[in-house]
Image (tube, rainbow, N blue to C red; front, side):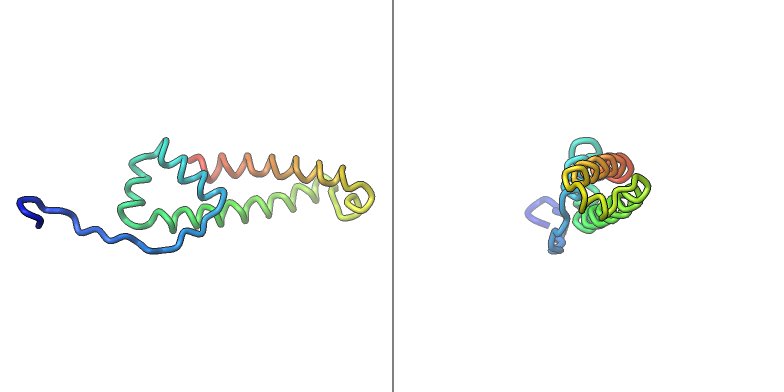
Length: 109
């Protein structure tokens, strides 16, 4: 109690934010489109853990799906040795496709 008012006794979670690209995208999405969820996570001290978890899951899913798609399309180390620019172009296309899928499935929910 401070004067005539009761103020909540909030403690800030001192967990170190280690999230990357996908965590930042998720945070921005929550702020803009899911404000109640964002505020709940922030007030309960679960925001950073949530963002770290989403970032980790997204990175793992992109990596796994890139390997699978490269295998299906025949983008191998052999192609890399023969024509590096073709390999780079194919891998960039695969990564863009996989990131789009991850953004729709994990980030923008």
